[in-house]
Image 1 (cartoon, rainbow, N blue to C red):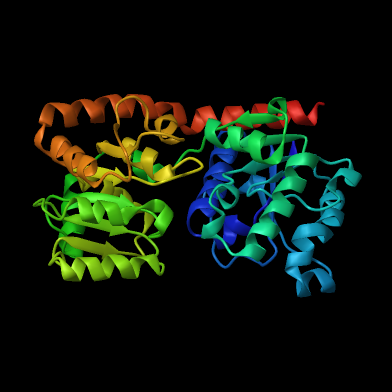
Image 2 (spheres, one colour; image 1 turned 90 degrees about the vertical axis):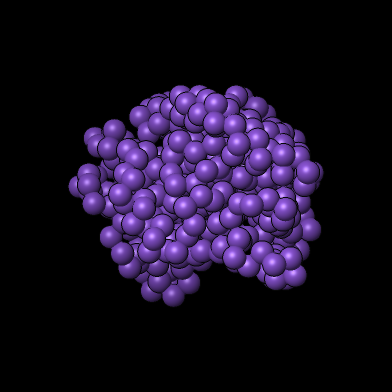
Amino acid sequence: MNLGFDAKRLYHNTTGLGNYSRDLIRILTEYYPENTYQLFNPKKGKHKLFTSNTSSIIERNPEDFISRSIPSFWRSSGIKNDLKKHEIDLFHGLSGELPFGITKTNIKSVVTIHDLIFIRYPHLFKYIDRKTYLKKFSYAAKNSNKIIAISEQTKLDIIDFLGINEDKIEVIYQGCHPAFKKEENKQEQNSLILKLGLPKDFILNVGTIEARKNVFNVVKSIKDLDVPLVIIGKETNYSNEIYKYVAQNNLTKRVIFLKGISMNDLALIYKSAKAFVYPSLFEGFGIPIIEALYSKTPVIITADGVFPEAGGPSSYYVDPNNIDELTHAIKDVLSNSELSSNMVKDGFRFVQKFNDDVIAKQMNDLYTKVSNQ
């Protein structure tokens, strides 16, 4: 198949949507190199993102003057001419969007919808952003041949909020970067911990430091515990509340903020942590959860929504708004070696359902099915 992809976030987003896009292309080219993968990027990429199976990957950029001058127009509409020119069989919108008018090209299309948080929690988004997202996501959902939801939770939201028939939606989970699947290397871990000046024992939280991720409650939960917390993620205004609380409660030496960590170093930090604590209020999926499970680190997460899908039966589930419950969970996991060991063993067994070969087959089978319709 000659496959086209909306590659804006693949090239220009270093976190969630970018990671999803890059990992998907990586595993597809590994397991199905017979396909051609054309990556339609509105602004030429600065870095080489793929080092293997690159013969099947082609980066496409706007070619005419208007499209180069207004890349947002090219991505939302003008790209259709290039899709036809390069004889694309199927186009995959990797982040909830498809070019307007794609149905007139006779090119089959699928779209991945990660979450509809902007509808579920509108107060977290600007009015204009909500309106823009709703217009784009609604169009893509109604005009695609198939919708890929990254979880059963997201599938339910697409049905409820966008009014889409469930038969049009396929759940295909996300994977994660191969760095988290490497065998443990204590020497590398110890060297990195020493280099970063981290304590020997600590618990970990990874993700954008924003209200929805709820890391403030983790900070509050360790106020009276003798355990350091390492927080890794992009800071927002929400971070200021945490810094203020940390200073007022003499937690400066026990709450450690890191950012700009490479994927390989992040994986080493996961493997070094005594527990991964992630009481997020809502996620479309929650890649950090499976990163922790692959890293053989005990996981403490939210009890409802998508979290049991990603965390499996062996994670420790809590009410994210109950500070005492969070404190008890952390104490329990850190003090009970048998519990911790079983969580690691059973969690690692569960997370194999998100392996690269499984996801690649599901995706390629879907492409084939849609192309042959």
